[in-house]
Image 1 (cartoon, helix red, strand yellow):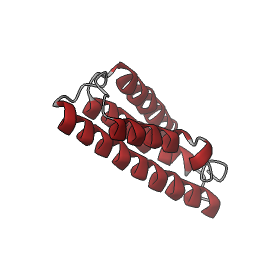
Image 2 (image 1 turned 180 degrees about the vertical axis):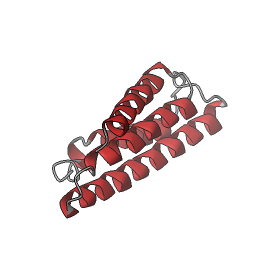
Image 3 (image 1 turned 45 degrees about the vertical axis):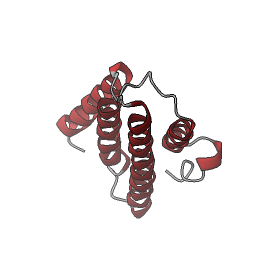
Image 4 (image 1 turned 90 degrees about the vertical axis):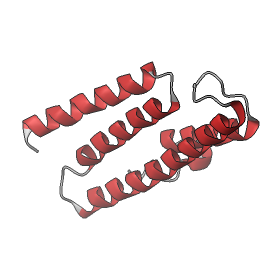
Length: 118
């Protein structure tokens, strides 16, 4: 991999993490998580081995499903509370969906089957 491309992906990974950590709005947190996802995929598949490509596809599919759940939980929360603020997570359904989405993104126990293969 080109060193400039690797530097660009590493910097965008740090940028996405910074945006996610410092956000107070659901959409900016989601954007930071998506920047992280798009930066990690080329780093996973940099060796053009079929297992690396398969791992990148699995990573992308799991992260896309988790991002969809995160957006759905934020929409439910905004529908019930009228706010898109991260600190106002009061509805139990949106809390459950958010916990599920974060568990999928992190590869925690009920959703950990994709993690060792990637």
